[in-house]
Length: 125
Image (cartoon, rainbow, N blue to C red; front, side, top):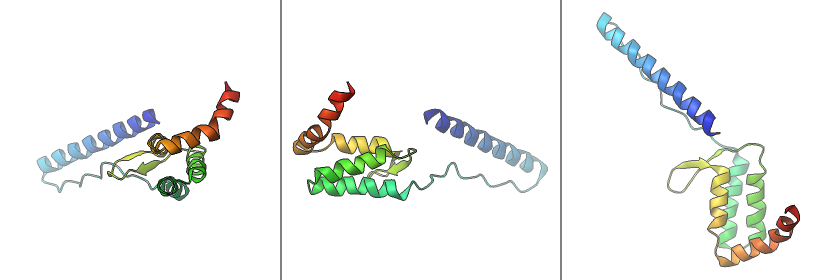
């Protein structure tokens, strides 16, 4: 994922450089320069993932831990990761955001998580 993002950033930088070069050449020749394209576009993520992230937050406030864990599972089991907008406006991996929300549960939520998942984790080891 990081390599793909780095590749897209390099492509965007090359495109900006090409536009700037054409603008300089156009000014030298008296022609009208082209407009610089947008730096990048953030595609909307899967609405099901956005809904699941909202359900995590709502269920955690209501201390409905089973719903929290079901929503986290939907995000983590999605066929691909997507970007999710955090409350502070930054876009992050939806999976990382779900994990962060899970790690910030109150003590009762963390205890419930262990009850739901310890047996499965022990079998996996």
